[in-house]
Length: 83
Image (cartoon, rainbow, N blue to C red; front, side, top):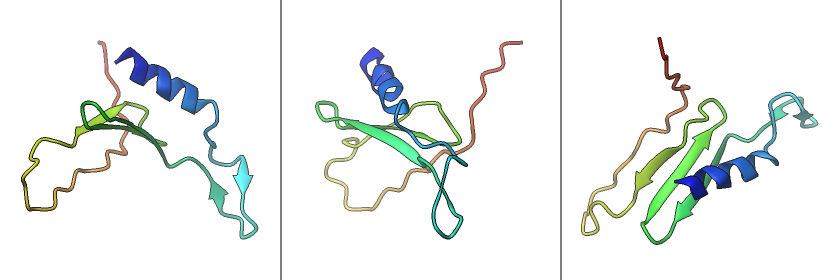
């Protein structure tokens, strides 16, 4: 888990923040999501612009499945309230 956290810290150094860059048509460019894969464990990790919590989806749960599985793209920030 420490390696995954470190990966997102490194990737964060080059992400685009809303409002910094605009296209010719005035649209804001920004990093919508960042992701990485653990090829050994077949797990996708991602964060979104709105939610910095690292989310994980294990991709080998049903290797012989024949149905498309869709996971929600969690955009709402998760805030851990301590009191």
